[in-house]
Each structure stands twice: as C-alpha cells, then as structure tokens.
Image 1 (cartoon, rainbow, N blue to C red):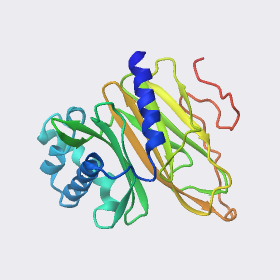
Image 2: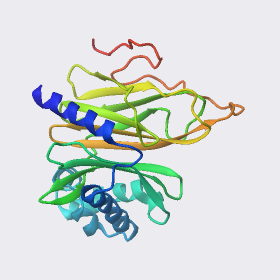
Image 3: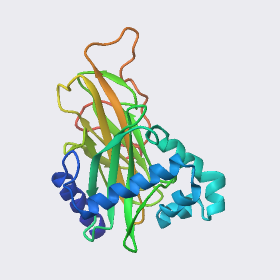
Length: 260
C-alpha cells in the first residue's frame, strides 16, 4: 500500500509538471533518443538493434532470447512503429515518474498515418530502454482509435496487468487529464480510467495517451480521434459495448464495478 501511494503521488507530480512535452533536459533528451533509435532499428529491420533497446522485462516477455524475439516478438514491434519509420513525428509527452528518475514515458504523434505511439522508458545501468510487454495492456475504449465524435466524448482506457496495478494516468493533446477517475477490479490487476473530456472540443484531430504501472512493469498506449463539425451521415458515434471491470459507459459519477 505504501508503494502504491508513493507511485500515485509521483504520477500526480509528473502529470502536473508536464506540458505538451516535458521541459528540455538531459533525461528527456535521452528518453527521446531511445525512441528514435527504436524507430530507426525498426525501419532497418534490425532485430538485434531493437533487442538491445528493450528493457529486461521486455526481453523476458518478448524473448527470452534474441532468436525467440526474431521469431515471435520483433514483427509486433515493427508493426507498432510502421507509420513512423519514414515520416516525421514529434513528442507529445515526455516525462519521468519515479523518484530516482528510472522510469519515464515518451509518446509521439505524426507519421504517415497521423497516428500516435507511446512507450514506457526505463533506465537500466544508466541507459534508457524501451519497455514493451504484451502481458500488460492499456486498451483504448473511448473514443476508439480513428473515431469521429461530435464536440464531446469521454476518454476511457482499460488496463490489464500481470501484477497489482499501482496507478494510471491520461493526457489529452499532450496536456495532463487530471479529471480522470480510476476503478480497480477486486484482484487489482484490472483497472478502468475514464473521464469526460473538456467541452466543447475543437474540431480536428486529438491525441490521447494512457500510462499504467505496477511495482514490476509499465505499459502505455496512444491513439488519435477526430472531432467533426457535424455528424457524418450513417456514422455511428460511441455506443461501444461495455467490457472489463466497468459495467456502464455513461457519464454518471458512480459507474458500477463488475464483481462488486
């Protein structure tokens, strides 16, 4: 419990001190370089270089050997970065969370598909490594990636982790989304984080970044949605089916929690 409270406080401090990108500094620059190196390695299809840029947790889950990574993990990493390997992108979130500056997050936006990508960054032996763990997921629920909405929407992500989740946070357009609420499942390995986006939203593209952490691992996701001036004909807005630990997808202040 003490660790959870400490991590939650560190997340709050990181959220309140982060803008569209973190203030320039040696750590933020090195975190961004780690992502740049991963993008370059994916562009070159250099599996060994990608492997060298992964954290120990990532190697255990995507390997545990380079040969295993080449056969089953490398393609997923390349696919996640495909739209960024030959098109410009920029950092929209670049922060650290831990008191010893050993865990951070970088999210980028742009690329050939005008999408977004987020990855935790962990310092190991003085070097920033990217953390990609397929057993720890942060799923975009509302709006879905690529959705078109009319002026308003909830931001909603669901987290599933291999261990007890200590906390999570959201950003909208690179700005901390401090209104987000968090709900844990009984086993504390699943969480929903959600909230009503500021109204009205400007027309055009918007980015959402979500991050979650346990005592051992971290995970993140980023996605893009569009605010339309008016509802396109035949377009279905929202109406996503409920799943996970929250049983309703409405803006009421007291949503039900499955298993409660």
